[in-house]
Amino acid sequence: MGTGAEVAVACDVRRIGSPVDKLGDEALLAGLGAGDEELTAAFVRRFGPKVYGVALAILGDQAAAEDVSQAAFERAWRHGSSYDPRRATVGTWLAAVTRNLAIDAARVRRPTPVDPSALLEAAGVVRVGTEAEVLAGETAAELRAALRRLPPEQARAVVLCGLAGLSASQVAEAEQIPLGTAKTRIRTAMGRLRVALADPGGCDD
Amino acid sequence: MTDQGCGEVSDLLAELALGVADAEGRAGALAHLEICAGCQAELRSFADTADALASLAPEVEPPAGFEQRVLSTLGAARRGGVPAPAGTPATCAGPPRPSRSGGSLRRTHARRPSGSPAPPGRGPAGWSRRARHRALLASAAAVVVVGLAAAGLALSGAGGKPAPAKAVLTGALVSGHRHLGQVVVMRDRSALVSVAVHGEAGVAWVRCELVDAGGKAVTIGKFALSDGSGDWAAGAGAAAWEAHEALLVDAATGRVVARAELAAS
Image (tube, rainbow over all chains, first blue to last red; front, side, top):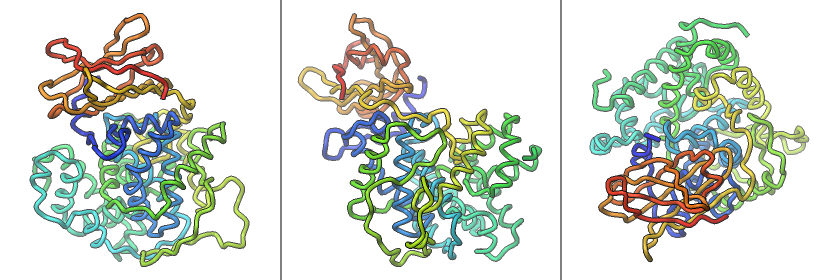
């Protein structure tokens, strides 16, 4: 119960058109779980671009990304009660659900090379001037700032895994480095990002 | 599956959290995680970072008709009645979609050749076998469900049932004639109460109470308003089943700020 304030701060109260579009993310998720048609439609409308974007970043194919997006919404319906508002926003939870499904889908075929610089740019990491967002405590902005502070080879490795869903051996292949080096870069980068999120004002170098 | 020690598992935690560890490493790590609270906590913390990272993917407007197709899929799944067992991947049982080319995207999708029959009960992209394997691994480690669910190991076994349809109560939050937001109460296992409130300036903290038919009020929790707006949710337990009305009470003064009469949505 003591997390009310955090949730209130973390959740974006949206004001779009229909009355249900004004409801919070969690209310829409609850409506999805309960089978409420209007709330379900609002949920899909609100999170469609996010879910589809995560799936497309990993799969790189529109049809496959849509298959996975559909599966992600179905999973959100079936397993919405496992969502824990103290841990993440609904959007972040749903992104993780989608990522897992997309990585499963991607495993069944051989991926073609991914450009990590393009990934970093698409994720808004290259963009500068976000210190105000960092000060405002936005997780995404903090994470982008932390990615910018990483040595470039670590940033590339961690977005290849975290955004494109590549395994360590695929990263090794893409970056033409030994598997052990790829694993070390992924691990080190994740460790630094974790520290940065836990203490955004601190120095993680 | 062989158990691994903390050192070996700790080297793999980042990849586990990112969902990219290979099956062999994952199986060994799960066996260890089942018995090691320290590594579970580490994994949970990496999972939060990994999930935030996944969330950085740029939003992309889905193709035309996407929303309708998703809703059809969900509708078909709901009409299917019996939910899939926990951890079973969702199937894509919607109406046929028009095929689209991948355009300029960087990967080609190795779809099943159009002439070959689809394996029964599998999603069209052929990923469900892998997902099922993953779910089986996961079910062997139910004790770490909470930490691993966020770590992307396709768990959520504990929550593997959809709520019964129409178990949702909604009510408009009003103060006099002013509409201030909405309350949703789930009459399912989650017993979740969600409140969205806008435009109640001058109040910093509100208490949410559920009132039963006899007028008895139960406080569900307290949350902060920012510039008069807030968006909050909490489990209400048994009170969700008895609720007829929801009240928002100014935590500082005890004044009822807004009330919502609840009715089946």
